Structures are given as C-alpha cells and as structure tokens.
Image (cartoon, rainbow, N blue to C red; front, side, top):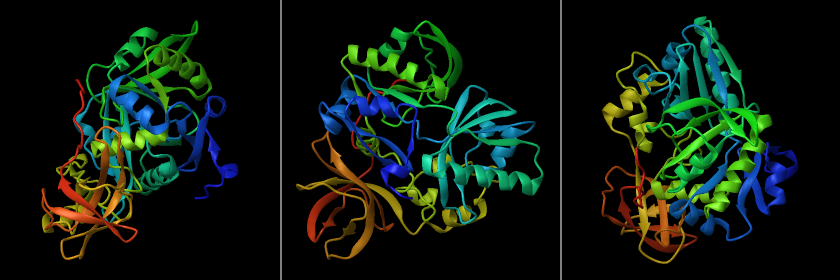
Length: 377
C-alpha cells in the first residue's frame, strides 16, 4: 500500500491533529498521528503508564453482521468461541486462511444474537468483510455484512487515571474487562450516542470509546480537555506501539500475518478448539498436534542498542535460530525489548544475540510482558 501522504485517508480528527503539532505518518492506508510536540513518544508513553493518555485510533476498521443467526454464522467463520459470551460482551478473535494463518485479528462486540459489531485492523477491513461475504454466499446464510469503516471514530482512554476521565464526563464504565455498553452521553450540552468498551492495547486500565463519525470531534475535544486537566496527554501511535510491545501484545503485520499461525504466535487462547468449525481449523489442529516449527518469545536486551523488526536471532555459534517481529526501546525499563519467532528448542533464560546491521546485540529470552501494570477488573 502506498505511503504517499496525498494518497492516504484522513480520519475525522485530521485537522485537530495537524493544528496541535502532530507528526503524521501512514498507518494501514491512513494518515494518523505518530506523536505530538511537547515530549514525543517517550513523554506520551510515560503519561499512559503514570497518569492517562488519549489515543485516536479511528483508522481501525468497523463492520457489522446483522440478521437472524448472525452470531452463529460468525462463530462458524472466526476462531474464538462467540457462543461462550453473552450480549454486552466483546471477544478477541481471528479470521484465518484455510492454511490456518491469520488474515486479521479483531474484536467482536456481541449486541444480540442477530447483531455483531466488529473492529478489525485498518488495512485488513476490506479483506475481512470480503471473506465473510464469500462465506455467507457459499452457505446461503441470511445475514447482512456491512463495511462501516468510515461510520465511526474510535478513541482509547488508557492509564491509571482513565476512570477519572470517564467520571468527569459522566461516561459509562463497564465493570468487567471486555464488556461494553451502548449509551447516550451529554457532550457539550448535546446528546451523543456512543459505545464504551472496557479494553485497550496498552496493558493499563482503560476504555475504548466508539462515537459516530460526525460526533467524533466533539467527543475527542471533551476527552482531550479532561485528560490535559488531569496531567495526561494526547498520545500518538508511536507510544501505542511501545506500550503494546512492552506488554508482548501481537500486532498484525508483525506477530500475526498470512505467514504466521496463532499457534506459532502464542495466541492459541483465541481459538475455540472445541468448536465444530471455523476457518482453517483442520490445518491449525494438525499443526498443534504435530508441534509448530517456531514459537513466539520475548527478548530483553542485555547490551546497548535498540532492536528492530526483521533482525536475525543468533545462538552462541552464530547460527540463525529466529527473527524478530517487533523491536523497540522500552521507556519504562530504559532498555531494548523485542518480540521474535524462534526455533522450538530455544528456552526461557537462553542468552542469544541479534544481528543489528552486522553488530551483535546481546539478548535474554524472557516471557512477556516485559513490565508489570496495574490493571483492575
């Protein structure tokens, strides 16, 4: 996909970001804020870990499945077992290829047996909608599948003071992790319909707020004012990446892809193994039974240097035993961290090295998360 700024799509807050000094960059075909003036990625990352941060992730996809048997249909397609949750609950799940690799990871919001709302990744929304539509047509299911990518914004309020932000604006706070509510809030004296889910991508206590596209700016400005008042910051997608890497969370295009299975990526917990059917089940079950040819691990730098994606992982003899899928400097730890796919023989505690442009960076094999957070609920 082209990263030419003139060819990238704009979210509902584009002008706000530009006006507030954001450095913009391409993400999944959208021009989104990487970081803002006033400290950049490290300051924004630290705000989320210590106070509160506000993210615009409106580039994420949105789609709907509606009609009689909508949830049953989706459950025959997507990996996780949607039959184990009830209305008002959300579930992380995967859309897989017949080979068991990952088309996309997404969150499914179950409103009713005939109403499912999906949030896939920006670049994969069309592919997910197309695959679902093809499956519907193949089995003659009577459901409507709609691409809602530009119908809604998505914001994330993350950090120890996220509850205070919600309280200040009178926004609903779902009590349980991965639960959500649809509500009407008073924003600037006007009623605004939105969905609030108790989730996020940072490891901190937080919420994701989904307003209509046309209401997005008003909701964002109200949130941003409170976040600033509480000592927090608007945060760009650079901090979102460092935060999720510290937690060891998989990102599609890195830890998940059409070349990587959930078993290899260590997200087999997002697979309903006992379900009768889901895309790629036969191939994935075979890999699980035989043993995957590689596995996901965390790598903590023991020397000075910043790991990046795509670096070869080397053993003591200099043999390649894997490759990094993500890498960054951890502002919380003050050192480099990486996620990698490695040979199954690699064990926790092993001392390895990364080939960084011909220079070796020592790393230790660890189990993510790299940092401990204070999530409640």
